[in-house]
Length: 138
Length: 138
Length: 138
Length: 138
Image 1 (cartoon, chains in turn green, orange, purple, brown):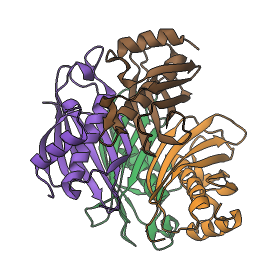
Image 2: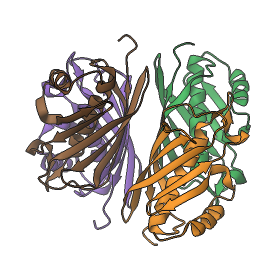
Image 3: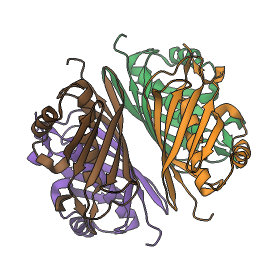
Image 4: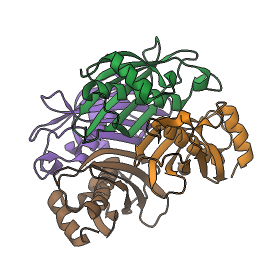
C-alpha cells in the first residue's frame, strides 16, 4: 500500500473541500476502501430516499480512494467512465456504506467496482463500475 | 407534451428541495430538456474543474426532466442505470449546459442520452445514457 | 432454484440454435451460473486474442442462465443494458470461464454481474454488469 | 481522414477473418462510419429477433472503424469499455444499420457512440457508447 489512511484523508479534504458531503473514509487497504455516508437532508429526496447523485458521488470517491491506495496521491487521476445500477431503495434514515475495490490497475488506467449498502444490511442498494485515467507524467 | 415548463419547475423544486444545486431548467420540449448549471464553489475541485458528481447530478436531472415531459409528473420514476463518459475538462468559471433527449419511452422503462457542454463551446465535456424505471401503478 | 441444469441446457439449445458458440453451462445454482467458452478460431482475432464480441456473448448468456435459475424458463426476458470493462488480454489458447451471479431480481427487472477469467487464472479478463427486462405477462 | 474506405476494409478483413459476420462497411468519414449487418440465421434467436451479441459485435466494429479513420490503422487499439442499451425489437428479416461517430479522440483513449437501426426505419433498436485504449507506442 502506497499511502496511509491519514495521508489519504488529508488529500481528500484538499481535493474535495466541500468536506464530508461525499462520505468519510472508514477503512483503507491495498486496492480497496470502505467509505460511509452519514445521510443528511442535503442527500435526501422526498420520502426520505437517498438521492441518486449522492450515491454516485459516494461510489466515485470510494473507488478513487481504493485507486490511490495503489498508485499514491496522484491528483491528476480523473474518472473517465462510471456505470451504476440502482438496485433497491436505501433504508430510510440510515448511513450508506460503500465497499470499493480495484479490479485492474495498469499504467494508464484503473478499473474497479463498488457495492453500496445501507448500514446493517447485506443487500446492495447500488453497484457501480468505474474507470480512471492515470496521467502519464506522474 | 404532457406538462409545461412551469409545472416541471414546481415539481423539481419539490422533489429536489436543495434548490438549484443540480441545475436550472432552460428549455423543455416533447422528450427533451436543456438545463444549465451555474458553477459555484460547491461544484468545484482544486484547479477550478467542475467535479464529476456535479456533472452526473446535472445529467440525471436533465434527462429526468425530458422523461417527465412525456410521461407527466410521476414522482415514482427512478433512475435504474446511469453510464457516463467524461470526455474533456470543462472550461473554468463557465456554466455547464445539459442537452437531454429520450431515445425510447416504453411502459415500464425510459432510456435517453445527455450531452454536457461548457456554455459557448461545442465540444462535449461528458456524455451520459440513463435508464429510468417507470412504476406500473401510475 | 426453479429449474435444473438439464432443463436450462435444453432451453438454451433451443434459444441459441447456433450451439456452443456462446459457451457451455458448467454449473448452475440459485441465482448464479458458471459457463465455459472453448476458444475456437471463430472467437479469435489475429495474435490469438479472444475477440471482444465473443467475450460479450459469453457474459450475456452466462448471466441469462443465472437469471433463469430464479425466474424459470421465461423466453421473453431480454437484455436491456450491458456494460463491460475489458481488463486484461486473455491467455492464448485457453478456455474462458464466466462466473455470473444476480445482484437483484425484481418483478420487472433483473440485474447481475459476470467475471470472465482465463481457465486456471484468477485475474479477471473482463467484468460485465447486465440488466434484463422481465415481461409482465409471464 | 487518415485512411481510405478500401484500406480499412482490407484491414478489417485481416483483423476479423471470420468475414462479414460482424457487418460490412457502407460509408466512412472523418470520425464516423456506417456499417450494415445482413442478418443471417447465425444472428437470430427464435422468433426471428437479431441476437444481442450480434448487435453488440456490429456496434463495436462500426465504432472501431470510425476510430481508425482518425488514428490510422493501429492494430493494437482495443475496446476498454462498452455500454449498450437495447431499445426496441429489430424488424424481422431486415438488415441492421450502425451509425457510429467519435465524440473524443485523445492520445490514450477514444470514445464514441453508435446508433443501431433496422434498415428503412428511424427508431433506434439499440444505442452504444464505447471506449478504446490507444497504445502509446504507435
